[in-house]
Image (cartoon, rainbow, N blue to C red; front, side):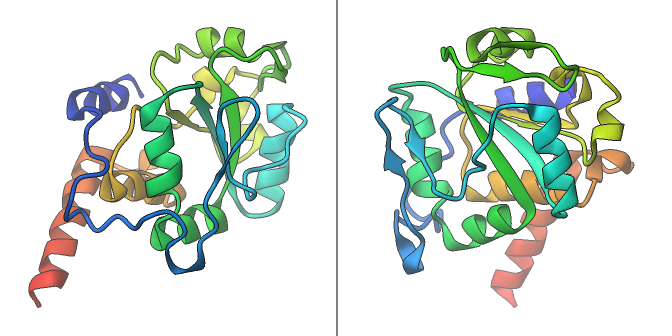
Length: 206
């Protein structure tokens, strides 16, 4: 996972909001835009209503045939706003994420108590430090079942991590790669992503 994080850091944080990327505006095709809450974060009504026991959330997600992803955000984060108001309201992205994932939203500097997969409870901000989260937004993809976590922390059990903000193609490809359990194959995400780009380019030229 360290290699994957490094690759995302190298790719950078500027792939959003670029004209001609095909990213739809908020509310496109009937997708409901997020609401800016009193806590200063953008919230989607389809994010998981959680008691912040991540083991329970993981079990619930698995029982519903979904994967669990935890996203860390912070107040005033422009990239968080872009992900929520541009990428996650793109109809294709929105549909795939909603159908295949449960999303738990945490505040990088928050004080709400969260119980990690290893059973240890702490404020959001301490969990962020424990998991080594430095950038916002950061999406942490957890294993497909509680058994796969085996009492480890979320950072230890995570199958992938996406630090920073990316455009529709990279964002959606990573969610698909996780859903397809690409991390269990010999094809790393970088090669999968390149293959998907080439596939999309071929489809546009045919």
